[in-house]
Image (tube, rainbow, N blue to C red; front, side, top):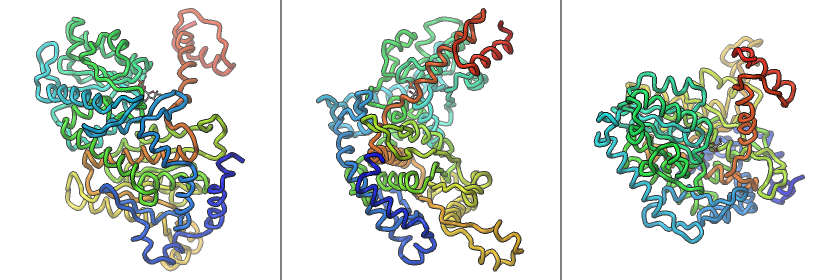
Amino acid sequence: MSALTASPAWQALQAHADALRGTHLRALFAADPQRGERLALQAEGITLDYSKHRITDETLRLLQALATQAGLRARIDAMFAGERINVTEHRAVLHVALRAPRGADIRVDGVNVVPEVHQVLDRMAAFAEQVRSGAWRGHTGQRIRNIVNIGIGGSDLGPVMAYEALRHYSARELRLRFVSNVDGTDFAEAVQDLDAAETLFIVSSKTFTTLETMTNAHSARDWALAGLGGDPAAVAKHFVAVSTNAPAVSAFGIHTDNMFGFWDWVGGRYSMDSAIGLSTMLAIGPAQFSEMLAGFHAMDAHFRTAPFERNLPVLMGLLSLWYADFFDAQTLAVLPYDQYLKRFPAYLQQLTMESNGKHVTLDGQPVGVPTCPVVWGEPGTNGQHSFYQLIHQGTHLIPCDLIAFAQPLNPLGRHHDMLLANVLAQAEALAFGKTADEVRAEGTAEALVPHRVFEGNRPSSLLLLDKLTPAALGKLVALYEHSVFTQAAVWHINAFDQWGVELGKALAQRIIPELESPAALALAHDSSTNALIRRVRQMRGRP
Ligand code: F6P
């Protein structure tokens, strides 16, 4: 038994969960005609319907007691106060400062970081205006029409998600592309129809050492110079960098005048609203980028000040933990009913799983309970014609986050009512299902009845917003960021390091020369890896 599972709040929840496990959502709704009205929370323009969760008022009380026992309030205060809560890297965690309004005061080691944040935002805005207006010209005098962001992980997923999400608001005359994979195909396909004279590369990398990004950046420089007559001076007009590592940016050949900085207190997966969002700002313009930041900030303020029982991220975080730890749910499906949010689940995969995919506590002890669920998803209604079968009738319990917007951005006949009808129908079907008697009453042959029964009792949250705007996107992302934080506080884990990505990186560095060497090298891996290296070498015509 771990310290967490032995704690009074955990024990109380465990007993409560065991008692509630056999209760169906049908019974919970039948017992309380007001449940649907009551178990809904509205804040910052987001309505969270959490009535279709396998919870009672007592569950909520006990989950909040768990958060209190875990010291969540003090953890929130510590983050906003700039304390070095990323203990394994000895860093503050201040993505909330990235969207603090001008004039706010958020300190790291006694220094207010907000003025620096706005200095960079102002430089980004000036640059974005130049590019968008055509004042910024390429080496041959042509205006920039193509922007290629080169980055990976947090330096890619946020930018690409935000671009897709806010495409409706983007300058359509600019073509944005995103290159992340070290697979040469990614770069080759991204530039195959582009003219180097009209193309600007943003090399986005916090460290400026990441293998994939630096490899792609070098290939981009070769490609650009080849298309621009080979003059190295061309780099200045076609490459900018977003990084915390000025020396490495200079060494690459990008002048630091063309570098937009951020700070070690911004984690990669929490950086889409830092200079890493330069591609987003180029696409939607500085004013709408500011609206997005204001949305983030509104959710930050809500998270910081709202009591736990009326706190959206706290509630979402605790509900996710409820299923992961007390119902053996191993995954969480995020199902946006908005085509513009098609990359949102992929974005959340890094945010949630790189943050909370941890097995030890802040003090290095085993957590003792399952931590972050596997997050996955696709936009509705596409998922309905694919994997929803398993959610409705499979043997796994899969809590779902359904996300919908009342207003369409592209009104088209009856499309939007149909879309909304589908999301509401799915939540209803998941919760209430269809009993054998209901199936029989439809005249179904007895042999088919079990096949057509929907057990129901599948929990879901419905997040309903008015319209997908830049501010709404900021609120949604901050909501999930703080939900992740809430869960990490209860599990007493560090959501801000990612040591788990290191081993594979180091092994790859060792294997690269073993694949590339003209002569066979002595191999000292396990017999499987050795054999695979030999096979690959053979297939590539190497001894
Ligand atoms: O995959 C590990 C990681 O460090 C992520 O946390 C980060 O977002 C990504 O690599 C990219 O890192 P960088 O921005 O330094 O290139």
